[in-house]
Image (cartoon, rainbow, N blue to C red):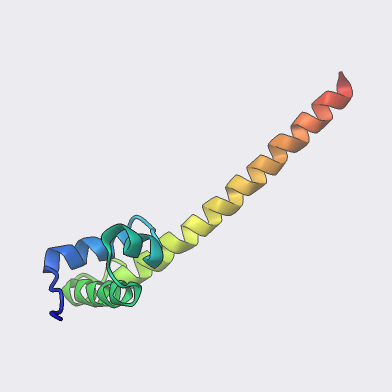
Length: 98
């Protein structure tokens, strides 16, 4: 059985889906038909490669940016849940006034 070879562009796109698009490893694995462990390795390699390309100290590292994106997504989800609760609360009290 031959090992399947993937191009560098394919690997970078898979890593981008996980880092930028925020898809989970299992989602990308299902979408592309690639082993999940391999995807996480490609993601790590891609982040290290970007880290090596980073020359300016003003910019955040790719790993820091990925962590910030994850933190902001979590915060956005929490804010959306709070908004839903507030909408339901307003609707509940609006019924009582009628």
